Length: 267
Image 1: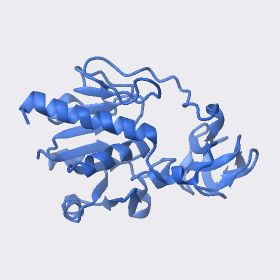
Image 2 (image 1 turned 90 degrees about the horizontal axis):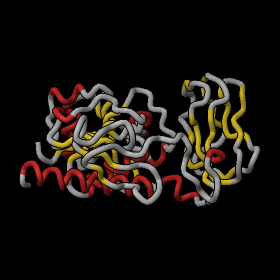
Image 3 (image 1 turned 135 degrees about the vertical axis):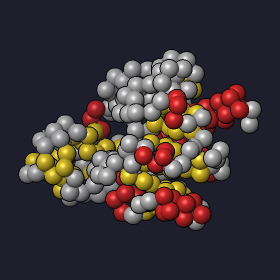
Image 4 (image 1 turned 120 degrees about the vertical axis):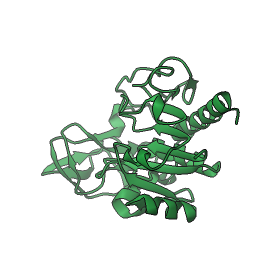
């Protein structure tokens, strides 16, 4: 099936990839876990798992329960999202390409034999060994670069800087427990303001800005997990649209698919 691409993951980076490939005429299938811990929910097709459907910049994703649903959703011009972290769907669908965009900083189970083209986003993959290509996800000069031999930059654990803020932008769970949000994505907040609770522990914003991402209410989280993101630029629209980083990575994935398809199969 030369126009089908499976993207493993449906978070914000995976969504940027799927959005661009969908616009270019490919049929996309995204796979996710049953309870996504995605932070940028309103800019992620993973929200379809939580809400049944999700729309990002004019493209709609719909939760699929079975193979029949997938084809129906495609026929309606949308993107199916299937809870299938083990890619069991490969027993029924043979895609042109598989893209691992989970961003787990490790290979979550793909290898070159799974599709005509295999691509890993970010660190944890080696192009020419376990995948055909790797796309750089680290902000900087090489963001979105396609690597056909070797690996992406090692994860530093330090988030990208926005207006001089890095770690300060993140909201992390102070303890393990169930989340209870008292603010929502897109809300403006001040430094020290309570955004959510984990169990009975408050989670406060470290800076002024808007809530760019916030994990879904009533989610069980481990201590230290990233559960939110404050954008100091204060532009509400950015909370609901594809980021510059996602667009760069998406461009790299598109380049890799077209290049490898041509090199391998002349088409």
